[in-house]
Length: 423
Ligand SMILES: *Cc1c(COP(=O)(O)O)cnc(C)c1O
Image (cartoon, rainbow, N blue to C red; front, side, top):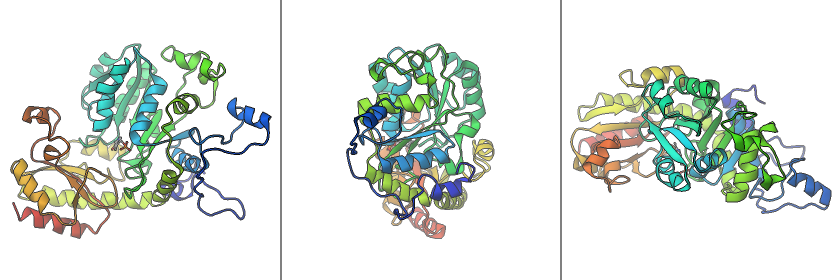
């Protein structure tokens, strides 16, 4: 299956029915699984054989989605989580303990930023932030022997910056550090981070992979390309885990994925539900088609906004004038997805009037689904921030975030044009 292209893997990977079985995976709505044999059960607990015993650790429907996304990312193991944030938390918990630190791009999803800046520090794990456009030397100056991973998003939500993979992967290689990419806004259809040196890939499947705003979910993919064995940075992978019969994770073929599931999923229970795995699996069938359409529509809408007299600036890497155009050409030749931001000439009030006059494009705190949606951060998600705080978060009062859907682009543009006439 692995040699197929992403378009094929989106519909074919993960599930192969045997004769007489259902063509698409059944929803296996069961907490537990029957075993009539004590030895077989013992072998499962010892990780000597594969099988299901309790849906907090693994479930057949979730397993299908895990295999599909792992195949798309060219990984060796996928772990379905209850949300994207759960996936990020579990990844951090698998690699870090109190006293460790994480070196991360500051241009990341708000929830991830809070996790690294506020919540994990309460447990003794420090987030060290860098500007994604800073020099390699600056990033290296943040790294010490307690750094457990370097973290970034391919296309950042909501900053829409694009990460320079070569810069980060060279640093990680030099220091023997795990390189983690949140690939939510690009999906493996537009970019496969492993090809550029990433070791672990994370998704909020709640966005494009589901694509229909129907199911929350997260996915962790272990790419199987990081050697934990005898790496002094990762003692927890090289000493026996007494909570798991003295298992040494670095000795296993899938070191990170096994530790993550056997230890952290066991202890946190942040598992994806079978129902959500099923919905996400269905959504994923059309992922490649949808991404093509999101990219084409976004390109058209960005060009329209860019020449609009009432628009001050537009950020989308399909525009030759965009600061990330060159990086997008290099890493995202098929397109950079449907997310963009733009500044309306005027202030926060002008934006509010504009938003009120939209009819098709709806106001939502969501992005990356089939329907176009829009958000004015200064009056919604970021309204508690002062003028100065907004500026330091890179959010001007006139910034509008737009997630372009798969409708006819002429209808999206007509709706925007109608709202522009009101200001
Ligand atoms: C939405 C999002 C998340 C969080 O995912 P949830 O499924 O909402 O928990 C993480 N990273 C990025 C880039 C996102 O857009």
